[in-house]
Length: 422
Image 1 (cartoon, rainbow, N blue to C red):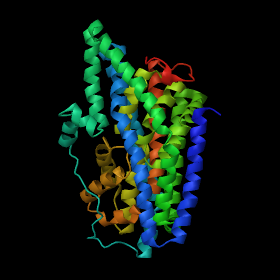
Image 2 (image 1 turned 90 degrees about the horizontal axis):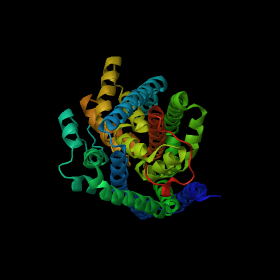
Image 3 (image 1 turned 45 degrees about the vertical axis):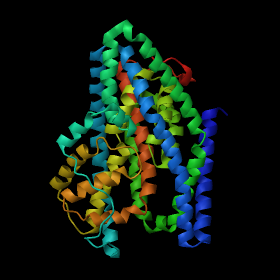
Image 4 (image 1 turned 90 degrees about the vertical axis):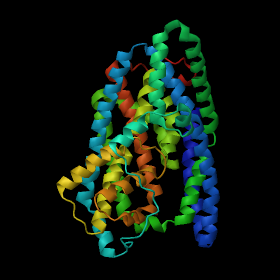
């Protein structure tokens, strides 16, 4: 068993042990003690996620700059960017539309309305809302300081700066070669650091799952069982659609891609953070045959523009809350909501609870009670697990398809982490 398969097995075992341990704690101690246990476990999970975030900024910057500099052609960068954004827009429409169709088909909010267990309309959800206008989005796109952007792990801002930096390095030519070689070395060092950090993944997975089960218990799963089952069915259908579209471009080889992304997908599912899987997703794409310069360019953009699972959840959850409060939304209103979410979901970080902030901002624009978010808080972690895993699959397929369009999809390699960036 190689190291990748061994790590995947350890994560899977940790997931099962976490459920067992969490249930044991929940069933044997008082709620206060369970909460204390959950808080302690969350420290371990937080530490792991911070280690991952420590890697993201230098990894994105170094791999993207080297990739663009070695492209050497601004027209090529622009062409790849247009193709990637085109795919992201289509994938966003599919994800948002599927969420709307399924929530109207299943109508999970009706059962909640009948139960009468609804928070009062004026109750605060505790979720900070932000109204993202077009002006705010555009100004946020460009960093006022790259140091600030890196400190806050603003992937989109890092991508914008890296585009300028890499393009300028290519234009300078031979004089920039020593600097690009040094940045190339940074990229390989960060991939090695990723390997070290990933050794802690099983511990973090155990802590995350044990903590949430100890605090909420398995009862929360039965209370919202129907809602969760319908959402997970929607996630499965989205996977089928994405893989089907990927197969149209990649052929049967798309199944090999899914196999390469198995580890990072499981990691994203277990930690409820697609950001945690970024370094391993990049490595998996390289093993699949995507050249590093292209993968390092398309994947970070996808983490801001192509969170398929999160976008589907936004429409599904927003209409669910409206149904629960007996608010009928017309087709035109739902389509308008979808267009609003197309904008507000862009730049959304792939971290836990980011979707709730976007939903909270959207609810206020359509006069839907924000208190409805309280219906989802108890199970949001379990929903976030599914949408985070979907984000990884969606971005992996997107990057591979763009590579195919560019003729940059080579033969699978065994150990791209030590191969030169190309």
